[in-house]
Amino acid sequence: MTGLILSLAGCSNQPQQPEFIPPVFPPPPAEPRFVYERTLRFASNIIKPSRAQQLKRFATGQALEQKGLVKPYDIAVKDGRVYVTDTVQRAIIVFDIVGARYFEFGTMEPGSLRKPTGIDIADNGDVLVSDVEARRVLVYSAEGQYLRSIGNPKQLKRPSDVAIDSKNQLVYVVDTGGVDSQQHRIAVYDLNSGNFIRTIGTRGQKTGEFNIPLQASVASNGLLYVVDSGNFRIQAFDHTGKFKQSFGSLGRYPGQFARPKGIATDPKNNIYVVDTAFGNFQIFNPAGELLLFIGQRGQSSKPTNYMLPAGIDIDQEGRIYIADQFFRKVDIYRPFSIPPLDELEK
Image 1 (cartoon, helix red, strand yellow):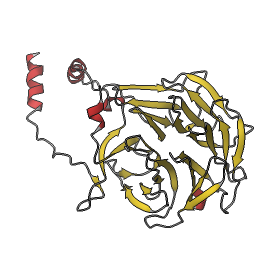
Image 2 (tube, rainbow, N blue to C red; image 1 turned 180 degrees about the vertical axis):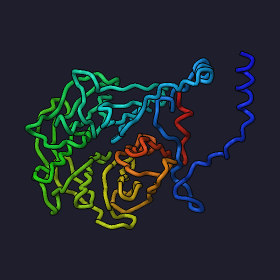
Image 3 (tube, helix red, strand yellow; image 1 turned 30 degrees about the vertical axis):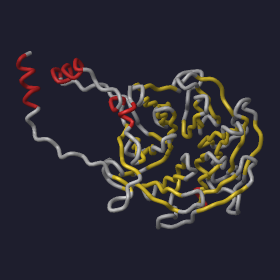
């Protein structure tokens, strides 16, 4: 044991890495608005191994079992819990940062997932997940207990995302359709009963029409924002399905889109749009004017680098959570004026 302790002590004499300085946005000399906070990949990112586990690992050379993300797609956050859809593991991966807990669900019957993509959380904590292969939305409790489903294959072609309108008790399901389908639309359901109400849009390029809609988000002002990816724009509708506005165009400059995918809104009704081709997300005000963009395409998985960014969400404090499928990670940014999540952990 003495030798082991000496070996451990010897490790402390190794050269130390330079101190990591979290990037801020916009960069100096501008006043910072957001700062990179942390990355989630594995359970060990929030649950630290015990001293006994560390000693056993050092003595045996056996690596600790790593549970975590394989191919994350979309994110929903509530009360310090980060829920991530994983299309390869066919599961929901949960990082409970405040509770220092990791768990998974959606792999057991009833309520097993085939290809979970979109996700959103109701005010009561229920988790709604769109399953693009099962062609329905599954509803779980906050702890992952299957409760019921919304929609069916007769109504939905390719349900890629789900968004909840808490004020009007509505569920919007983004039905992406396909190359040979005109069913590029939003299906609307009652949140409580699950009854089908109506659809919004059809395939096309005109105002209120869609070409491969992918994801959606409901802002606090009640507007539904939809990523109309094939038309390279964001469209907004009220709760009755009436078109309100659109912004965006095809291009390679800030404020334009090349491959828009994920979308989220913050408490101030700003809109965050992930662009897979740019490897970043752009932030727009409610008028559709560009405020800021964060991230870039990169070959390494270091913070702010993305190769296949997909889903995004914003919590009530304004923290940003973005998933990258290629680098198997979720990066978190926080407003510069608020404390890190670490300070909130139990």
